[in-house]
Image 1 (cartoon, rainbow, N blue to C red):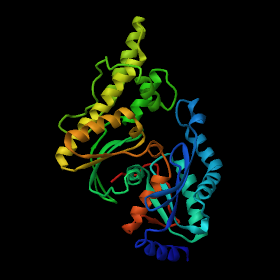
Image 2 (image 1 turned 30 degrees about the vertical axis):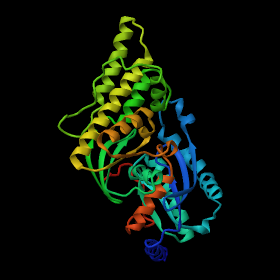
Image 3 (image 1 turned 60 degrees about the horizontal axis):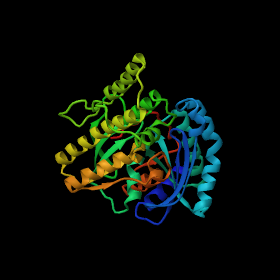
Image 4 (image 1 turned 90 degrees about the vertical axis):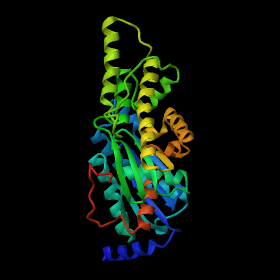
Length: 351
C-alpha cells in the first residue's frame, strides 16, 4: 500500500516546485538534517562529532555510528523547528544511502525509511558525492548544466563533466590518494590535530612556499591526479630533517605542500576547460573550503573567461542541505525514488 501511495505522490511532485523536502545525511561523522524548498534552505542542523574523534586522530566508525543513533532524532526535530514546519508539511524524505561508513549510513537510511513510511511520502535516495556537487545549486540558484566540477574531498579527487542533473562523466580522477586524505596525512606528520585540512591552511598562512615539493601529477597527458608522491615527499623531508637534527619551519612546509596540492588541481581544471569548452566550473567537497584553492580557481576563471562557483563554507563539508538540493533535481527528472527495501552502501559509483 505504501509503495503505491508514494509512487503517486512522487509523480505529482515532478511538476511542482513549492514543496518541502526533509533531508538527512549521516555518511561519516556529522549527523545532519535540513528542510529545503527547491534550491532554498529553510533550515540546516549539523551535529558534528569532530571533538569526539579528534583524540583518535581520525574517525572511528563504531563510535561514529553510536553517536548518529544518539543524535539523529534531536537533529531532525531541530531542523523542523528552525524551519517552523511539522512533519505533516513534508512532501518527501531524502537521505544519503552511499558512499560512506556503512554503520553510519544505516542510521540515516533506517530513520528516513521509517519517517517516509509513517508519513506516506516518497523516499528519495541520494549519492553522497553528487550531493556535494549539488551544494552549488544552493550557492548559485541560476546554475544549470552543462558545467565542469572539481571534486576535492577526503575520499575523492576528480574532474567531472556535468551534462544534466543526473548525467555526469568523470574525465579525471585520482590514481591513489585523494587530496583531502593527503592533507590529513601531512597534517599528522606535522603534529597538527584532526581534521588536518583546516589546520594545514591555518599554518600555511604564516609560511612561504620555499620548498619545491613535486606536484601530484599521475600523467601529464591526462586529467588524472596522484597525491601519493607529494605526500611521501613531505614525509621524507620531515624524516630527513629529524635524522640530521635540523630545525624545520613547519609553516613553510605547510605552505609549500598546499601550493603543490592546489597547483595540480588548477592546472588539470585548465586542461579540462580547454578540452570541453565549458564556461562554468564549480568546486565541491570539503577541500572546496580551502581559501588558497578558491583564490587560485578565481585566477583560472579570469584567465579563461569562465564563471567559477563554490558553496559557502558551511555547505562544503557534509550537510543535509546539499542532499535536499540533489533530491529536488532528481525528482524533477523522475528519478531517485527508493522503496522501503533501500539499503546503505559503503561504495557507490559517482557515474
